[in-house]
Structure formats: C-alpha cells, structure tokens
Length: 370
Ligand SMILES: Cc1ncc(COP(=O)(O)O)c(C=O)c1O
Image 1 (cartoon, rainbow, N blue to C red):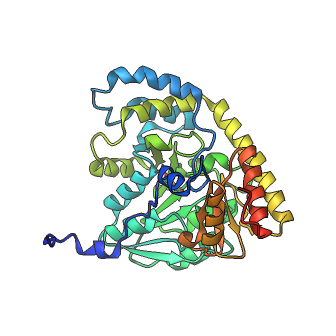
Image 2: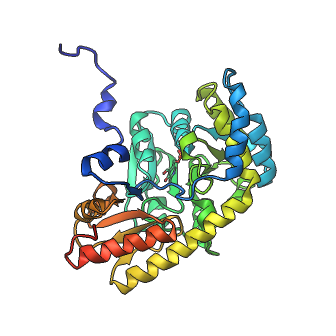
Image 3: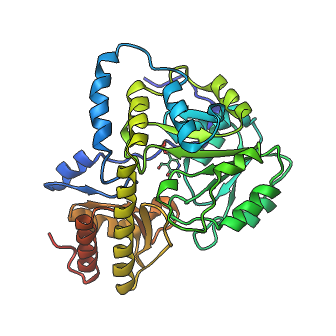
C-alpha cells in the first residue's frame, strides 16, 4: 500500500546516517572467526574496571527515572573542571548537545559555519532545523580559521570548530584559535567540539575552559564516549554560559541521560589512572603506526587523537575490503571526503602490528595474510 503521509519537506535534503552492517553480520557473511573493529572511534581498551563495579550497584534502581538534572555528575564535573555547576549541561552523548544547540539557537534560514570535512552531525542537524550549513574547506586537513571568519554574514548564528577534527585528527594552533575566538562577534555561538580533548598531548593545544569567563558565546563540548570508554551508555557534556544551559534545558527531553550513564560517568572521573594509561597506550600506538607507515611511504594527517587518516594512494574502499578479508574493519575515506584514504582507530600494540602486517601484504599484492 502506498504511503500517503508526508514528512517535513526539509527531510528530502537529509539522509540517515549510514550505519552499515553490524560487525556481527559482517563476521558471519565473511566467515571470519573474529573482527578487529577499528572503524568506529572507540576506546579499544574498554572502560575502567572501577566503573563496571559501580554499575552493578545501580541495578536495584532501574525502576526509578534518572535525575533529569544529573545533579551528582554535574557537581562532580564542576569540581573536576573547576567551573560553576550552572555552566554545565549533561547530554545523551555530545551528539545530543549539538542537536539541542541548533534546536535552541538556529532559526530557519540562519547560517552555521563549519569545516567542509568534519563531524557530519553538525551539517545534518543544521539542515534539519532549516538552516544553511556554510562549508569552509580544510587546509591540509586543518580548519581554516581565517576562511571561517570571512564566511560570517549577518545570517551566521553558530560556528563549529572540531578540535581535534574528526576525521583528520588535526588541531588548530593555540594562538590562531585564541585570535579567532576574539574576532567572532559576540552574538554568534562558537562551538568548540573537544570530543578527543583528553588524548591531545601537544603544547599547541588551547586550554579552552578559562575562556568561558571572557566569552559568553563560547560552548565547549566533551564526551565520556572516547577516552573514558563509555560510548555504549551515551553521555557527554557541554560547558557554556548559564544562559545557554538554561535555553538547552527548555528543549531537552526531561530524562535525557539514563541513570547508568550518569553513575558510570561519576566513577569514570574517579579513575583518572585508567584515563592516563589509555592515553599513554594510545601515544605508543600512534608512534608505532607513524613510524611504520612512514617507512612504507604512506602519508597521513598529523593526528592528536586516537585515530589516523592514512592516504592509501588507491581507493580507500579497496583497501578497506582487503583489510576486512583479514578480519580488520576500518573506515574507508570515501564516506569521509577522502576517497583515497582510510581512517583507522589506534589500537592495542598487538592489533596495530597485525594491521601493519596486513597492509604490507596488501601492498605487495598478496591480498593479506589469511
Ligand atoms: C568530533 C565528535 N564530536 C562528537 C561526537 C559524538 O560523541 P558522543 O555523542 O558519543 O558523545 C563524536 C563521535 O564520534 C565526534 O567524533
């Protein structure tokens, strides 16, 4: 029977996020004993064992609604980050906060400036709200902050800066970002997406939290999905002027963040040793991959996160499919704006070694090592 109902017109311009096949289905389809999934940017080392322990204690409370204001976590984060609690907003992943920011601040016809190749949810949500995404090309994988400033018009409402940028892993230099923030007119929101903040080990990275006091239009987004390894629970947070947080409260679901996620985030903050260990292991993996890839003649963007965008010199789809035959799943750059590249999550040393071994075999025409 033909469907007669019509969705909002704007949805003709939106495609659902391509989730693809599940790892389980791929494994069955390919007849593989297992798959090393390096295609989603998750923490391959899992989450803190301390979190797991704490979660079991929460199971007796599942019949109650979660705290819609996430008071305990907010207080904990406020202390941890040395900010006032009214500057914090807890979301169902930072993804939700991106959506709510646009829901609350973008009118139809408004413009939002962002990099041409960056986290795709900015563009999708701007479009859904009837706004116009204004895309500024990257320069060598980095945000072109001058170009972004030049793209501001009287219709601009928000600017997204993804730092480090997904999918390139690059950061913008401290001085340039400082200068940029000072030049954006105060009525335009500057959203600094710092999903990979904890991984950055570079002095050139701007510590943005102190800027909140000076710039009422600044929003910083962070998440528990990455270094804290809680992607499956969906929890992130934003730092902002209390007025912006209040506006987000108006458009959020009442109980937007489930209670297991809130409890897990609190215990994750209590285990900073785990975070430090993950970052160190990521650094070791990054150095190894950078060395090996350089020896093999590959180029890649200088990454400051837990993933790398590697130029493969042949279609990323081909390399992705060859790697998959050997039980490694990476993201082809074709879906990310770099058709001749792959994006790979930095993993354990064992997986990193195996990845390089497979890549070498593919290059030598053996199609892998299975
Ligand atoms: C740059 C960036 N921002 C935000 C997110 C969303 O993270 P989450 O909704 O899991 O907090 C991601 C996820 O991959 C990301 O890469």
